[in-house]
Length: 157
Image (cartoon, rainbow, N blue to C red):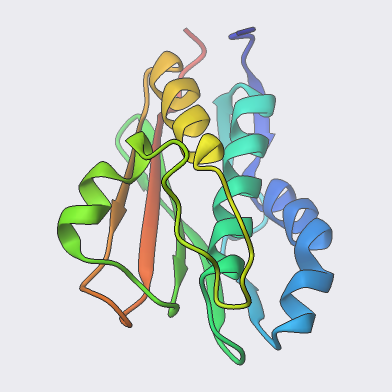
């Protein structure tokens, strides 16, 4: 994997990803909220950031029922940035959230029968970790939505 880093405006990445999945969200009447302020920048690999944000947004739409909401927001923390993709969808048992990045081929169907392989989350985990970051999933339980968090160091090294 190319680990070349460059300055990335995270809000623009989310806008582009929302554009890709806008029609899927509209089919389910899901609201997409980009709450990342324009100009929030990170120094990282554009391909990794773009792939992972796209994948998490796609999954959030897949597992959110009609009329739901998918939010993307961020927090700066010392020399890193946290990017959150949150939904009010079907959620999962907390113990499943811990293992979700290792479930290749063992995925649930989306709320409209959408299929997945689990490859995207496994790939996200591997790429984020190679960039010196972390990815995690949280849910308060089934029917209570999920939040996926990407933590990336924000340095040029």
